[in-house]
Length: 262
Ligand SMILES: Nc1ncnc2c1ncn2[C@@H]1O[C@H](COP(=O)(O)OP(=O)(O)OP(=O)(O)O)[C@@H](O)[C@H]1O
Image (tube, rainbow, N blue to C red; front, side, top):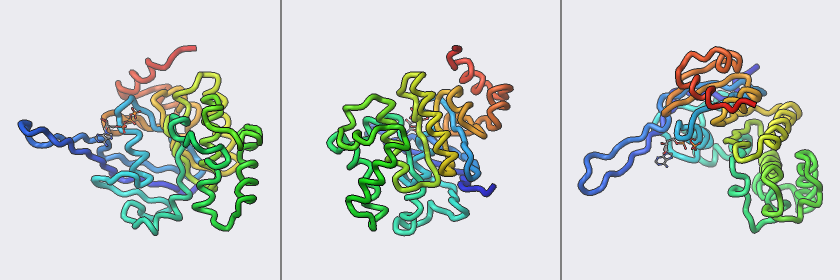
């Protein structure tokens, strides 16, 4: 299997400007010397408590924020140094699914418009009917009825909204999906449904995932490999059996102890 994504010594530091009387600006090392690879078709789980730097890694990979240092190779091409125009075709391949599907879905747009929007940008050859057909097929694929197209996000449950977010991400036929806490806001039973859907879609479309969560139990069932982040650094990495079965780092043990026992 080829390496799809390779992250080398990624650093994202934020400087906090002090007030008039305070000393020099403080720096938050949100991501500090983080390196990992993801093989094509596999899932890398990225786990850590709130504030450990997970979302900052995600945003850096999609070039949504400036980085302090490091390199990111996508299909062996360094992307952090690419200009916007050169990155655009790759951006289509790299999509994100968010924790809060309500916050990330425009409440004034119908589901059809939400799914058709990325198609309008990236598949210009499709006319309105083509976009509608694609939206209908995607909705069916994520387990929602076609009539959902004419409804608005607030008319759906949290799990259904996440299915809409997944359909929107799939619309442009991505290769790499960053799932940032995609099930954290959902009930446990719904979590399992969404995780199963993501696994099925991975198999069908040969997707590669970076799966972010604070809950090791969620990541364990999804991942081929897991990395654990604490305060901007990777403190542990290995297979789910290694990380969850015989954790080497105190921080990982603490995360494991926080997993609710069913
Ligand atoms: N734009 C920003 N400016 C300043 N500090 C930031 C900024 N974005 C993130 N941080 C800080 O960087 C650190 C890592 O944040 P990040 O959101 O990546 O963590 P996280 O692990 O994803 O947590 P959560 O799950 O709560 O989002 C935190 O201390 C956060 O306050």
